[in-house]
Image (cartoon, rainbow, N blue to C red; front, side, top):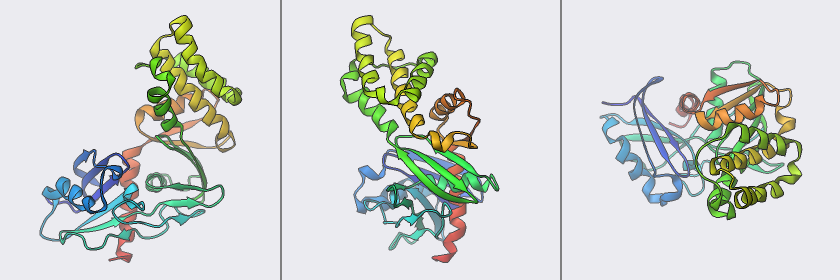
Length: 297
């Protein structure tokens, strides 16, 4: 099977590829060969291993987004400054590739004050806006580094990044809380903790240690502790982002599980939230970027 073009989402820890025929997915694959695990000379071979069977006699366009465009990636795709369209310039051509492919990388976006950057999320936002004409509001992209993005008139006006997901990972696996946090989910415990730090974010550090104390003194269920930890951190994030989401049209782009957690916390505050599938937005955004590659061929 020969693909018309190949879509690539290449993050820090994972590589996902899709063989595309127009807007239709013909095949897909993924691996753990993310940017952080590769030397600069290993990117092309890692990609070819996954897409070899999708290549034909003529060169195939490969359009990639994510950390593949970082300084440590396959090719550095310089940031564009906001305010701007999500993908304001044509993707960067990767030089000296295998003759069977023409590879392009979507540039990320930067904000000078306060300083912030994104790679990959801009493509998802482009895909979301392609299917939501004249949409104005705030987009939340939850993950290891959650983004809150203000969108107006088809442009990203400003954004902020929160390390909430990474903090959860570190606290649950590398801090004293690793002895008290386990698997499972307690919706009521999450909601209570999120509301707590939304109203009293200054108490976060004390509330965190309270999870350990509740285990030692009251044998708190480890699933409850996990849910409370998530609620405390997300509640603090929502307190900090209140100017973004309060009274605004809201959309969440992410994996279904984490998107529902964020949506639930926001809905408890009276917010109306729309959710969008991250993969669908990524592919729609890469398709938009592909339309710009003719400027670099």
